[in-house]
Amino acid sequence: MDTDHLADRLRRVVGRENVLDRDVDLQVYEYDAGVDMAYPRLVCFPTSTRQVSDVVKLLHKQQIPFVARGAGTNLSGGTVCKDAVIIEMSRMNRILEIDYPNMRAVVEPGLVNLHLVNTVAKDGYLYAPDPASQKVSTLGGNIGENSGGPHCLKYGVTTNHVLGLEVVLPNGQVIEVGGKALDTPGYDLTGLIVGSEGTFGIVTKITVRLIRQPEAIKTMLAIFNSLQDAADSVSAIIAAGILPATLELLDKAFIHAIEESLKCGYPLDAEAVLLIELDGIRDGLDRLAGHVTDLCKEHNVREVRVAKSDEEREHLWAGRRGAFGSLARMAPNFLTLDGTVPRTKLPEVLAKVVEIAKRHGLKVANCLHAGDGNLHPCLLYDERDDGAKKATRIAGFEILQACADAGGTLSGEHGIGIEKQNAMPFVFTKSDLDAMRRVKDVFDPAGLCNAEKIFPTEEASAHGE
Ligand SMILES: Cc1cc2nc3c(=O)[nH]c(=O)nc-3n(C[C@H](O)[C@H](O)[C@H](O)COP(=O)(O)OP(=O)(O)OC[C@H]3O[C@@H](n4cnc5c(N)ncnc54)[C@H](O)[C@@H]3O)c2cc1C
Image (cartoon, rainbow, N blue to C red; front, top):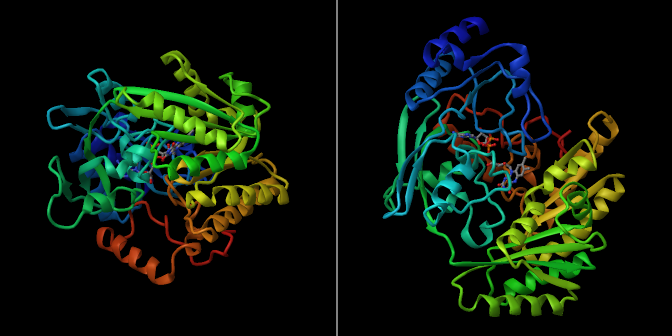
């Protein structure tokens, strides 16, 4: 079917105004927040499950590839699909039900994470997964990538808070998995679909768990003259049996980028800061904060600042939340890695990251969900410089290999997408990958749904060139 004819057929399903086919519009959808780019065939905006199903049935019949897209903030090329129809979910963004007695909410996938958080916060509830992109990223995208965030150390990642899904399968059939009740019998398909990067179908309805907001919160900024001391403090805090809500580490390069753009009072002469947040019942929180401070002192902390008001707390958080955006001060482009290692290996792997970047002549800024052992080294480059671009890709793969060698893995939360598919053999055997491929084939035998993601491409070399 030619593209004009296809656009016509899609318009009949979703309405005239809900299909984009002009070059100028499609260009906006050839990239996401990762580094890869590819031109899509068309973009359509369904507004109901029925429309999603009818669109997918049409595409399935015509054997045309398609991909679901939320806000396009993923960092792995997860929504970049050459010649595919992009099924953009942002117009399915309603909160369908809030059920406080059972602590559940039912929402559409295009709902922005922070809209749900702010809605339930007014009544003292919390939807816990909080990717730093939560101002714009959607629940559907969070499910696609099984997103985490600063508070996921204590509260768990998206999969721990999603209880049920309505999904349009790649042949257009609509299924429901899981639900409001716990422990639905049969296979845990909800768990399987969360984190499947949009390769098993299109999520059209989501049931999530709500929790009560903590009674009290204490936010601290621990300032270090050495990255190693900061990383060692992370291990010491967890080893002492303390589970902070967040343990975020920012290195000197990030501190400078943040201060130049946001001015949050992070000290420019420090090598690293730890943003530590404790929460829970009010009684005992001061004592816990004292214990954490003592542990940091054992690792040569220079100073521990405690936020004395909500305003001061917000000020400290503004730096962490705006960290990635602030890198624009340092370079036009950056590649964010997302490897995860056992916590005690953080100092060793961080040293390796610095060594790899230096050897390739690249600047690197490190931000870590340190409590989870999840590193975000950002390699800075200018995409107009082909040499730097190539060096960045190679250095990125070397960093992933270093994480794998340390007993870690390739992605804590950003997904594999296109960007890391050729690193999959670093952590999986051929048999492991074959088992995963067979699962993909069950859902999508025609291979149309977010095709050519996750699995290594045959012609790829070890370093993905
Ligand atoms: C500045 C910045 C900070 C970030 N911080 C974090 C962080 O702290 N933690 C974190 O985990 N991530 C973070 N990310 C990455 C990204 O924001 C998350 O992966 C987010 O969940 C993506 O949501 P999205 O709506 O943009 O999804 P998209 O990028 O549009 O899609 C992501 C994946 O989900 C699939 N998908 C989307 N909607 C559906 C649907 N309805 N059904 C099935 N599949 C679907 C897509 O096909 C794709 O594979 C950050 C990104 C940026 C740019």
